[in-house]
Image (tube, rainbow, N blue to C red; front, top):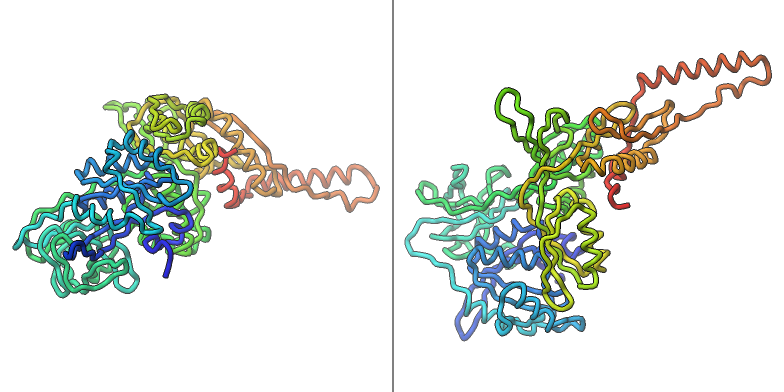
Length: 565
């Protein structure tokens, strides 16, 4: 027996959030009739919206669950709009009504104001005690229509997820639109055209349970001995071998918005890291990666994420589940660069690595992503939240009251300004009661520059960042002050510089390790001491030319905290 059975990851239980969507098939009797309910538990956080949209494509309806102790959150509004776009029947439900901290009246008021539901349609349940759950299941059977299927049609199944098993290969999660599938049958994946023989089919109860056959309308899994991770694409259509069918509408490919470099701590772990990333990307389609090389950190990967929480979760899963120690560079967003015309039209580039930016003289326009940020906060924190948004170059859009004590603030704000520590600061300002949701709207030009960090006159590409010109000097000074503390002293002086273009805007010097070469001279002529000091000076000069500066891993991690001070 285990609490929170569907949240099977340690990370999910620790953080109290859902990261991976989980499906379960449940038999339920009502009025003497047996029903089969296929349920999918989805995440709620904005970074996992892709998981939610995929699950909605496999469903006919949605249970909109709101916590009575927390009220409507920013992502609740976003996910309700997703469900409406997918034409799903929505059943609004308030959970945790048995809690002493439950604020029922305020929550009902917020749901009617922000989600457009009627107060008399809202069901009240307690998942802990079971109160109201039977009424909810009866309402699901009554209000949500069964899947529409036709007899005699060939097999068509939508792939909405997949996982990799070391012994069984790739396990495909499917929702059958038409036909049926059974063990021993040959199937074709339409996007690749490859044919495989089905070894096992079944449903989730919530563990895998082999049933031998899946019929139209059911949700389950297929094991077909698929060894290569890249052979399965989420959103693909599965059909019988040799059948000609129309492909089901798949999913819009998610666009990664936050990028960072991930490198193995030990160079020998590069192959292990590559295998771990392959496994992760199989059941996380929003995660992208490609090899890259850094002069400072060696061989690694440029990884793309849907948001900051997504980035944090991937890093922790690599270290915990895959047992690979990694170094992560500072996160950055995708920028658009309009390069000056060279005898033709100006060229527009998308850059997700500051080290790849062209020289300042070649850039005609530097555009950054702007997102629409929605903050839900208590009314007493409005002033502090507005101040925080203005400090981050935000433009006020609107303010709307959910209830007398909670308000939604909308701002258009540069995405780069919220990817470091914005969420943590907002949580501390609102004492944990604030929530946020964002959506990238467009790319707009601004006065942006690449801040270069030079160590002993050599540029360290992994420490390059893009920032607003007005903030460049402050950020550059803070970065080299942190590096000065973290880089150990060498036998020669090390110059640390922050530069924009060819102009150095800040400098610090790490003093050399001192050695008293005159200690052995007891008295005697001063010229002996001078001769020894001159010899040492020449040696240090020679060492500076041939010596290299080693930057420890903790220095890269320390620079990540630049905005948190």
